[in-house]
Amino acid sequence: MKLKKIFKGIVAALATLLIVSVAATALPTKAHAATNSSSVSAIKKRGTIKIAVFGDLQPYGWVTKSGKRTGYDVYLARQIGKDLGVKVKFVQVNADSRVDALKSNKVDLVLANFTVTPQRKKQVSFAKPYMKVSVGVLSKKSNPITKASQLKGKKVIVTKGTTAEQYFTEHSNGVTLQKYDSKTQQFNALKNGRASALADDNSYLFAWVKKHPTYTVGIKKIGTESEISPAVKKGNKSLLNWTNKEITKLNKKGFFTTDYNKNLKPYFGSDVKPSDIIITNNK
Image (cartoon, rainbow, N blue to C red; front, side, top):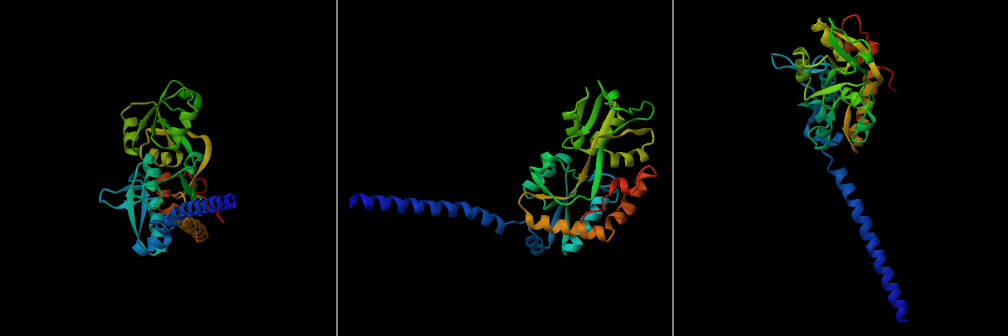
């Protein structure tokens, strides 16, 4: 009888420990959901959405001499704020600080020309894409680099945290990378003759050479084509679902074509068509 009582006592104690353990595991998840400061309801309650954009990437996100923030991503950000019924608080980021800005809750949403990659998908959640892009290579028109084999033994400029840096890290092609923190720094380095070429997203290299005609995008595409999407913090299903619906709705209204004609077309010229840049078939 004593053994039976002892056995029952042990079983009861184990059952209690199991219940406590399960409850303890479940509580943080509920607390996280309840305290998600970037959920749609939390954003609407405070009346502001924090959106990460670039400040020196013309024509996608930059600040004019008069202090006005403008560009393709900025135009989209303002539309998102309008449709949410809140004000937009812009948070300026560099390429390599976009992921950390989400993880540290400095921003709710990233619209800083954020290319989708397998590595980034492990760290943040991407919504539906609204643009497509490839890595391009910029060089002097007087000494153009038009094929990858010409890069062997050359110095190539990239911005830290970009797909261009990632591509040439994985497929070095015999190049030596010079890495900079911002777009401004990388283009200044090229103009100062610190390297033979510069690699970055081809879409804004096209825009840059239009203003700097002594340079050319000799390699218009290297590697595979990628997509650009809004990004939210991992686990933020509320804002992710809303953003997916928003991208679909805006596509149906022709918003991205309007955005292209207003903010990109004046910078690209005849070599680039809307279909080369924007994605309009999201469902």
